[in-house]
Picture (cartoon, helix red, strand yellow):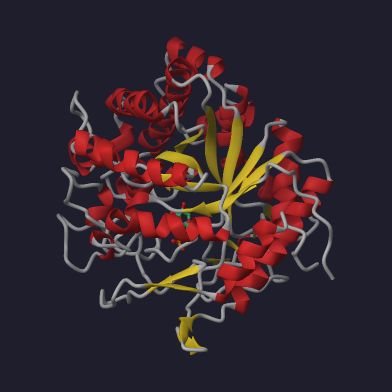
Length: 473
Ligand code: BGP
């Protein structure tokens, strides 16, 4: 049964990517190294000393050379928006220079040209897990306050260059993930086990101030820009109705919600300050920092959503499993993907309602999707993938987005993750595929890099064409 469209007429349908996971060309165009160039296995192993040939991100899916072809395929699906990130180390190869690299800037001019050619709105992430390596090695990443100034300079260059052509900006991808993946998310070189809580939360604070400064810069340099924060959303349910379990799940969930609270309200919530005190964390927060946070709150809240988790106060029941970048207590009512991520479409409606009730800011779902192994087959002489599992996943999640819209939630758009197959962030595999477009590349680096449309390609094109009316309830 199909339903008539509940989605707003200007709903931004599209897809999402990140520079390090698609571009390749890791040492071309004057690009410096980023932390991704020393993370050949994602977050599953410690970093390498320097670039290694087993790192699939060196070539990724070669978007750097094939962007025009790929954006044309997105246009064929009817994308209204395309989320990509700018590789900081293409613009500032070391990160602490005063002058940007023109060749890097020119590359994104060309990407935006292609988007414009097809009437696609760019949705740009300023920093998506690709801090310049020099900033990690020399400054220990975001632990150091100097990063605030380097990031502000970088953001200002982007707004000055692209501000007239790009409306939607995200300051930091999944900003809350720095608590769990300090190197990937915060460019922090000190191994997680050795990192003090004070340094970790100081890094969080420095990023929050930088995010506010970027918002301030956008107001000055690109008055039409809309700036959003980007949070890894992970609804946390109590494992049982025991009030202690409810409190435990709320406490865990607040470690994520705090980031939205600060971006939207411009100040640290009481529960967050208490948790810092309880952990013996003493931060350097200046009066100027406080004013910046208060005066430069976001226009909208964006988030990724893949999984929900549970929590409990009962240590003996705390059986954890993999989640999106960090583990959570398993929910016995849910099934999981091949990578153990629990699948919960209703959780997306819950998050949308919760965020809307809490912040009353437009919400943008900028990541969602199923990482799965695909098999390339031949149908009527054409290579394709019959990815009914991916269609079912996205259909069920989008039905819940429709429910949230019916609940009165202001949802700006939906950009499913990895609209074209790309290298995984957590495991750096190619075989964990999310795309509507199959890319012929294998985990051992072999493959032609040719693109093939999966069954979901036509399915998504119809969802967009019908503005969601073709979804199956
Ligand atoms: C998010 C990241 C993305 C992306 C996605 C899927 O956490 O923002 O960069 O990769 O998760 O994760 P993975 O690639 O590990 O499957």
